[in-house]
Length: 566
Image (tube, rainbow, N blue to C red; front, side, top):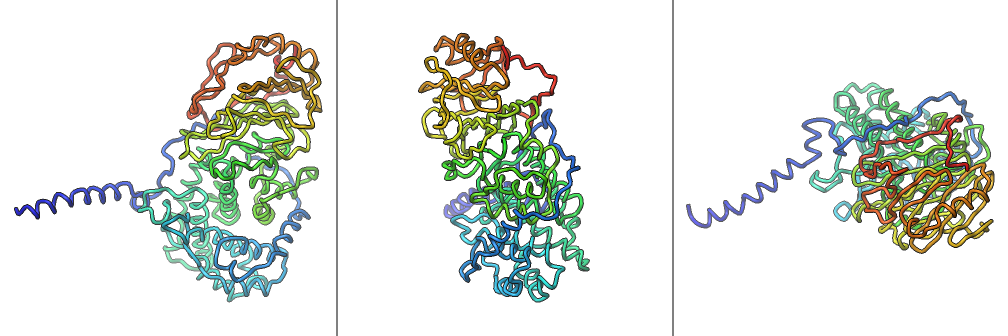
């Protein structure tokens, strides 16, 4: 064989190997061959605290708050340029239809709209991505008003169905566009795109088309959506607490909960109930400041009560009998709108837990390998929320300060007790140091300006948190400690704590409660370890990658919690 042919043959081998590797690792191709596939290669155990699903509350049919949110959007202008990109256009149209305002203009605008891009994440090789953002709301409009010809005119309906609702059939897309099928798409994009595809198919089948192309059972769409949401139900979300993406995940789930088959609707409701229960356990009176995955540029947000998830919740609550709550939605208006427009209502226990913590609890929430946990310690009138830990730049996890929420009207980080460290760079923090009524970190405690110490001794300070809450802090440059107690003799607690923890060297690694309970910790723990080490020399499971979805203790009325008393 000539040398040139041999060289050509040998040079061709790597290309063949490369192509085989691409085919072998092509997630999209695998799904076409094998059906539903997993987008996360593990399963989290459920833990001992179940997500509550029971619903007995009666909800009002109308809400002045919801109408006001709709009016805010209905009053916004729509320019021709807005029709060519993602943004507020579709939500403005939805709001006007909800209020039955400017209906002829709404129809004219919809008929002028085009499919300006493709679904899925936009990136340098897919600059016209993100069409699934407007597609999702167009799907909402179609399902809510498609059979109301006085609101959506026949020719508008035709344009929506045959042009703007661009996804149909059974080609469920698991992967980011133009990545050779090698990179999984994000949860929000999968749910928005494939939920919209599924719902277009469902509409067409329900309106007389028997073509198997649109049959969500035969084409595999139902199986794949159930599998995707089933993973979320078992493992929680990969993009937990994400700003901004959680809002779009919830929006897509609201569509499925409202308009899908009974089985798909129920599964979407279950995932929404999990997301909400997670929020309730880590919040107090709609103050919510947990660690999150994506995006780093949102790390400087300091507002406590107006994240995107809270915006949905405030709309839902407006249909309840609860009137006295913070109704500021901040930058989350678009999500408050979806909460106002859609029929989903949360479970009874979730609504109760938002404001009433019973006798308190200590709860740990696992998010799986290479993630970070959520940890919460609640009393009747306080909640300590862990800030989490970044697991390296590629993890895209934003660690937050450890926060002490009180039953008050504070809504900004500067207005509450918090601690973090070392330094100011969240990428270097391990703020998982939360235990029962206790928090510690490798940085000083930040005390809000309006709080004045009742007593002080060295680095120790005593504060009244109001409503029976006593707060004791230790503030040094490289060590901060917060403890919270309820219905105790504050002065006696303070004196005993100072006495039991008088050695600053020992305090770097251990804290003793007034009743003798001894906690050990390492505020400089590795990023894959819980800061807490032991309770009364009984080792704790510090490997939070292995933690169940939700586990802990929800205290009953007759529980004896001696650490609160001396």
